[in-house]
Amino acid sequence: MVKVELHAHTSDDPIDRIPYSACDLIDRAAALGYGALAVTLHDRQLDIRPLAAYAAERGIVLIPGVERTIEGRHVLLLNFSGAAEEVQSFDDLARLKRREAGLVVAPHPYYPAISSLFGCLSRHADLFDAVEYNAMYTSTLNFNAPAARWACAHGKPMVGNGDVHRLVQLGTTYSLVDADRDPAAICRAIRAGRVRVVTRPLSWPAAVRIMASIAAPPLGFAPRRPPQPVLGSQVAG
Image 1: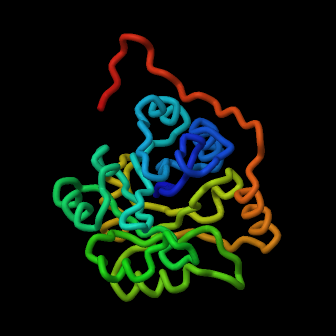
Image 2 (image 1 turned 90 degrees about the vertical axis):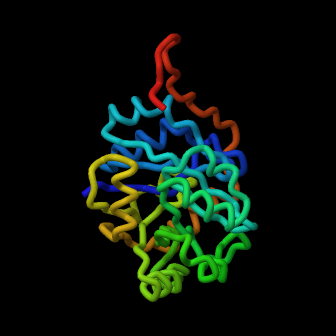
């Protein structure tokens, strides 16, 4: 079983201000025993090739990903080519899925945000391979409950994701996937339902601290630059 995080942001994000680099995220994931990690920036697919060796040295395989805004709603597109950045409509997504065998995940579909899917999830149910169980919840307030009911009713697997904007979020909710440490194998296994969500609720103080940190990010952060390929070397694409 591979411990997997499929929804994490870094300082490369073009929209949210994130106070840690991709290298910092990889280091933290390795310390927590993850075997696979997707960096899912908003509307930009990070080039993970310069980071692949750094991650591999720490036992982690990187999965290409993007949190794409489609018709105003957030959708996780995983292990697709750079064409995922060009998806603007659900019709575009359907065409992408016909061409490529990536994984489409519904993130925080019923959380109270304008970018959440809500009814779009049912209207486009056939496009989604899995539904996210998001780490931001407590024992008394859990917006994942309707998502879990929807997934059960539609025969879709759930994946546990941190939706990581602060490193402290990593590790309370994650997926265990019955697959080799390979992006395509992990995506196939999730589609087939060979995935288990491991999760525990946040305490109210922890949830408040995280939300306060996201609302008022620290100043003066200088992210670590990712490792650069040696001049003249070839990076496999």
